[in-house]
Length: 282
Image (cartoon, rainbow, N blue to C red; front, side, top):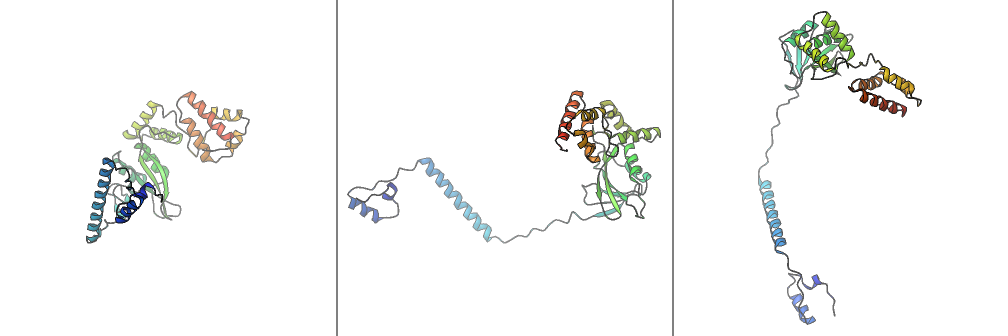
């Protein structure tokens, strides 16, 4: 007898062929198990969703095309002349810090007097060597910024004649460098500090940041406890540290000087010495 699988015995749509086969075999063909009601409902829902998707696609295909008009170019540079202090400014957009050129320190000071502390800051233009356009120098600008509670950060090239440096209001609880601590001491002695700048100094003195000032890249001073740990190591950590560049050494010193607790400081020094012994850097 011809052996047929269960599904071969019943295939809807094949009509008289299976009826004839059933009669020849002398027994009725078996139907597959009936489909559960929940499965039938699921398949019906899927079929309905498919029909809706096809109808939507047909509607979109028959609709006329619409071309969106792009917004105006927001990257266009706008140049303007500042009304306070004779500063010339330009900005790439209304939300980004302006690029400002000040001819001297007095112009920068006048600008800071008229601008609140919660601004996004600005980019100062500094003339490069050989440029015939007079600008405030970096040291002059930094002194003025410290008087008003501001600080410098990023440096960027601009063109063959100018470079840029970002100046912003000092953030709450931001760290102080030993260089700026020394500068502020001279500014206080000269009577140049303004209330906003003095408030930042007073806050740093109260919470200990003034005492924990870190060494800047130009004047890296290795703390005595870190130097002692390096000298006590017999794996070559001191020699490897001596071969690092100024920036890498400063980064390690800053991490030590930022620590408040003595126990945490000792642990940090131990971690750095182990790292140097493995000939690794930050």
